[in-house]
Amino acid sequence: MLRSTLLFLSRQPRLFRFVRHNGFAKAMASRFVAGETIDSAVVAVQRLNDQGISASLDLLGESVTNEAEARAAGVEYVRLLDAIAQNTLDANVSVKLTAMGQDIGDDLCESIMRTILDRAQERGGFVRLDMEGSAYTTRTFDFFEKRLHPRYPDTVGIVLQSALRRTLADVERAIALNCRVRLCKGAYLEPADVAFPSKADVNRNYVACMKALMERGRYPGIATHDPAIISVATAFAAEKGIERSRFEFQMLYGVRRDLQEQLARDGYRLRVYVPFGTQWYPYLMRRLAERPANLVFMTGNILREFTGRRKGKGRRTA
Ligand code: FDA
Image (cartoon, rainbow, N blue to C red; front, side, top):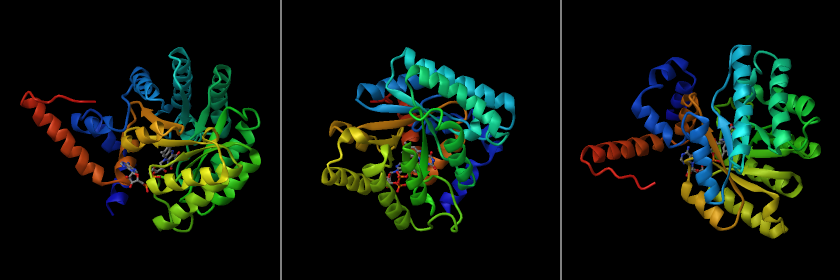
């Protein structure tokens, strides 16, 4: 119930305009979002790289409604790729097609994506297409398969969501294409005819998709914070003799930092998804919806820091 409410609130732009400059909401967002500018994102990635962790930078923004906005977002991504190269960061980028004009037209979206992919290719970078709600799955995969992958086979990859009933078939389609896949559970509220309503089924499907990708796929990104699934992945790799260089784990900025450090210390490849930008509100609400306990936990932390500062004792340790 709370999850549905938070996901509903994530789609209310008027509410975002209200909270955009609210200090409390911004403090909550700072746990999951690396600031509003490219410079702040660069600093966050440098800290991760210092711990041996790679990153994928996401300029927050979804569903633009006009061509000028879409083109401006594309220009920002090119600037981001330049910043990655100039600062010699170990990072790639993640892009949402709706932010690149997908709802306006495929030709516009393709021309913007080509500009980004040309620059990524020139810089030896990589671009991941995030996957949005199920209304976009077929369109995104078809667009990727027909318009982007043939031209940029080493530079662009896709995301699949184990919550969707269709995903095992999509995994086979991706393996046949020899394209790079990030596998996640899926962050969107979906109808039962397209997605598994039970978490146990989502997890079972995740493991089936993950094993297929690890054995036969091309450098899959195993994107989860679920310790049980991570244990299955490490045991499966050991059992099948799959080297650690053939896959990577991926996690979200600010989520299970303990597990992130542990995996990096244990010698697994780990990439952290680092979102930044002014459009942080829908992203924050999706993270809170995944774990509503965060709402209580973060409110408590912020209040503690706030009252600590007022008493002159508020010293942050990290
Ligand atoms: P699950 O939700 O079962 O959580 C497992 C455990 O992880 C929890 O018990 C808790 O300990 C911890 N945890 C999970 N979420 C947390 C949170 N928000 N705060 C604190 N703890 C939390 N989705 C999508 O639809 N399209 C996409 O393109 C992407 N891209 C993407 C990239 C990367 C790198 C990651 C890690 C995730 C995504 N996602 C995504 C989001 C994904 O679909 C999913 O919603 C979240 O990762 C949460 O699912 P878990 O696999 O972590 O499992």
